Length: 241
Length: 394
Image 1 (tube, rainbow over the protein chains, first blue to last red):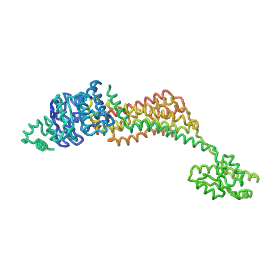
Image 2 (image 1 turned 90 degrees about the vertical axis):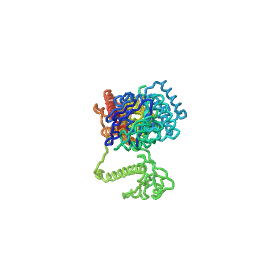
Image 3 (image 1 turned 180 degrees about the vertical axis):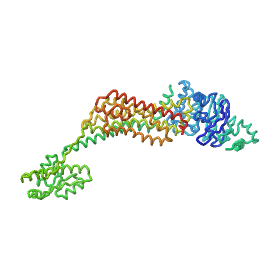
C-alpha cells in the first residue's frame, strides 16, 4: 500500500503541492489525475525519493520515502516521464544495468531479462543500441528496466503520452497483468479516457490540492453525471487557488 | 558486485562506444601532444643551426671586379653561385622578384677604380625584405661586407699613421648568458603541460557525459530511484573518469617515448634518454593528478545547467594547470617542499627534474603525491555534498 499524508512541496515561491493525502491499495490501479501543473509529477517524484517533501509523509510498503529511502527504492519500480535510456547501450544492457544496481544475482538477473524481453516483445531490438529507438520502443525498454527486480509497486509518470494506439493497448494489458499479480500501480495522466480505461481508483488533484477521490462509478454518482470527463471538470473547478 | 564497480564499468563501456570520447581520449591528447612537441623541438633546433655558420651560396655579379671581396666572403662561408643570364643590377633585381634567387650581390662596374681612388666603391645587396629567410641571409652578407669595409678602412688609417679606433668611438659587445639547460627549461615546461593537458582531456568527455549529459538525457532521474546511494553513483562515475585519464596519460607518455627517440635533444642540452624508465617515473608523478582532475571536472560539470555549458567551463578549466607551469618556467622556480603542495606545479618541477636526470628527493615525491591526492579527496567530498542536493536534477 502507498500512503500519502498531508504532502506539501514548494519550489521557491511556487507551491507545487499544498498538502494532499490519499492511499493506493495493492492489487489495484490508482490513477493520479489533474490538469497540467497540478502537481502530479512532483507527487510522483517525492514518492520515488527523488524530491524531498517540505512537510507531510509518504510511505510505500510501510517504508518512509524520506527516512527509509533505500528500502523504499528496493520495492518500487519507476517509469519516469522521459524514458532516459543510454543511447550507446543496447536495450538488454540498459535493462541489465538497472538489475545490477538493484543487486540481483546473475542467475535471477538473466532469467528476468529473458522473461521481460519475451513478454514485452523486445526480442528484435534487444541487442540494438537504444540510439535509434522509437518512442514506443523506448517506453517498453524503460518499463522492462523498471520491472527488472520484480517490484510490488510501480510508479508511472504519464506512461501513455506519445504512444500510438497499439502500444497504448499493450501497456494497458501489461498493467492489468501486473495488477492481477498483486502489484500496487500508481500512474499519472491528464487524459480522461486513459484513466477511465485503466484505473480502479481515481485521485483528482488541482493546484496541488486534492479535488476528489474514489472509484470512477462512485465519483460519477457523487457528481450526478454519467460522464467521467464532467466529473473531472467539476472537481477541478471546485478547487480554488 | 559493488554498485560503484557497476557504475564505473557501465560508464567505461558507454563512453568507449562514443566516438567523440575515443577521439579526445585515445587520439587527440596522446597524438597531438607528442607531435606538437616534436614540431616545436625541431623548430628550435632548426633555429639554433641556422644561426651557426651555415654555407651560403649567393650569386655574385661581376666577381672578377672584386676578387678580394669574393675571397673574404668565401672565408666567411658565403660562396658565389652561378645564375645564368644575369649580368646587371636590373637583371639581379628581376631574378629576386622572380624568386630565382633569394639574395644577389652586385659589384659595381666602377668598383675597382673607385676603390683605388678611395671614392666609396659600391656593392649592392638585392633582396626582398618581406621574405624573412632572405632578409636573414642578406643581413649576413651585409655583415660580412661591412666587416671587410672596416678592415680596409682600418688599413688606410694605419697607412696614414692614425689609430683605427679614432673612427670607432664605441665598442658594442654581446654577452649571451643563456645556457643550453636554461633554454630547454621552456621546452620541459611545455612537456609537463602536455602531460597534464592530455590527462585532463582524457576525462573531459566522461566528466561531462556522466553528469550534465546524464541530466540532459533525462537518465539521471530514474538512476536516482535505484537502491544505491548518490555517493556510490558519484564514486563510480569519478572512477570511470579516472580510468580514462590514466589511459590517456599512459598513451601520451608512450607517444613521447616514441617521438623523443627521433629528436636531437642533445642539441638543446636535454638528456635524450626519455625511455621507458623515465616514462614510468613520469606516470607515477603525474598519475595523482587524475583523481584531482576527475573530481574537479565532475564538480564543475555538476554545477552547470547543460551539456554545452559544462563543455565551455571544462574547456576553460583545461587551461588552469598551465598557470603554475608558466609561473614556474618564467620565474625559474626551484623545487622546494612548500611548492610540492601546489598541484601541477609540483608535477612540473618533479617531471622536469626527472627528465634532466637530476636526483629526485623521495620526500618531495611523497609530498607531491600526498598533497595532490588530498586535494582530490577534498574536491570529491565537496562534489558529494553537491550531489545530495535536490537541485541536482536541474
